[in-house]
Length: 175
Image 1 (tube, rainbow, N blue to C red):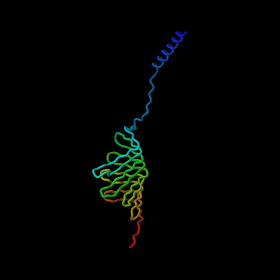
Image 2: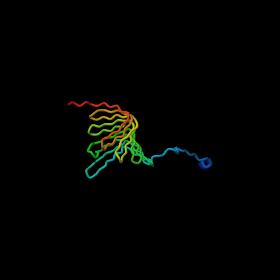
Image 3: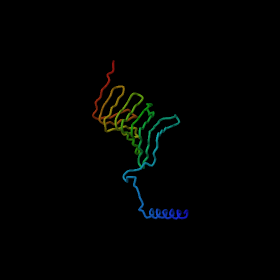
């Protein structure tokens, strides 16, 4: 009886094996050919720029995805001391770094230690020239007042802003 059961088992095994071999291979294409895949994905990223004078800048992000030609960031935050001695803080919900241009999107915030603050939904930051620019609505505030506008270019090194279609509310100083 045991030998007979063994023959049945071998016969069923060979039948299943032949059935599997004769089947057409099943393939699944999980990637869209038009979409790039991230080569590296990192979470809770922190980066320090350290010189002989100590830490000069700090950047962090909840997630970083590195692609062949660009990087994506979630909840990006930058903190640095600029050449004029002011401490600058930059944050946004999303960021894309492509070469030397950092595009910051969704709830962009720029604050400087002398009271300058800038709010917008989307801003481009050139890492080489340290220039912020945007083509969407913005709010710029400092100790002199608040300005609202449609687009701007802001040189963070010189503190000069060029804006279009602005409405400014200036604070009157007492003499």
